[in-house]
Amino acid sequence: MTDIAARLNQVKQRIQDAEQAAGRQAGSVQLLAVSKTQPVEVIRASINIGQLCFGESYAQEAVAKIQQLANVPGIEWHFIGPIQSNKTASLAEHFDWIHSVDRLKIAQRLNDQRPADKAPLNICIQVNTSGEISKSGISPDQLAELAQQIRQLPRLRLRGLMTIPAREDDTEQQRLPFRQLRELFETLNAQGLQLDTLSMGMTDDMEAAIQEGATIVRIGTALFGPRRK
Ligand SMILES: *Cc1c(COP(=O)(O)O)cnc(C)c1O
Image (cartoon, rainbow, N blue to C red; front, side, top):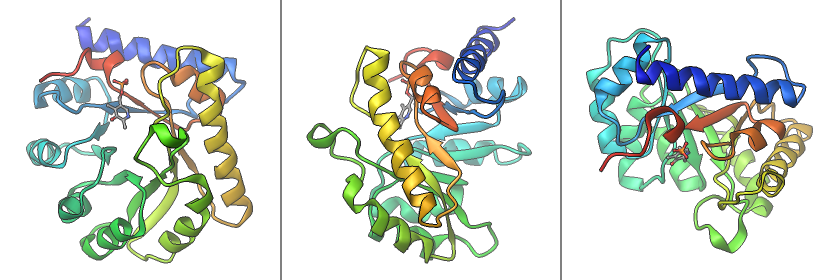
């Protein structure tokens, strides 16, 4: 078995074990393979063993890969990095999902720039669950207003919330920001928002995120090893 197949199996096993430990249905957590900095050959090798959802953080690098893999049926691209205004057109054109929307101006640009022949762009709002430590993500007290505004944009489909918490080694500590995100998600749904996605959990904290209800985990290092220069 190739290295990458072995790693993919290990990660899938971790997800399955965590689903079971949390009393959740098998298959309720989707694996997003974070391929940023990895060459297109690594993505091809993953596709050959059945992985079709990929996460990228840098627009220019991502678009080059997306174009090289344009003929792969069923491939799905998720943008998870910080968004600059001058990159929104390219993101709106090439991606299926954007996980890192944290302000209205960016959402409006993505809405205006989403090509008419494509399905509405799937959106997660990135929430800052770490207070002062983090600069990205909207603060929890401004979330409901942004969600209502994004909901009005016809070329976007608001799917859920995403967070990147500050690093913690202890699992119980790791769970706190994920729990906060889930509670915000439940509050929005109680207000009628019909969200179905909690994008949370990376290589070092996916078990904690799955305990707290993650529906997508974003995994790079455990699949592909250290990031390349
Ligand atoms: C790089 C990155 C990941 C993957 O992190 P690993 O710890 O390598 O699994 C997940 N989410 C975001 C937003 C990232 O930028």
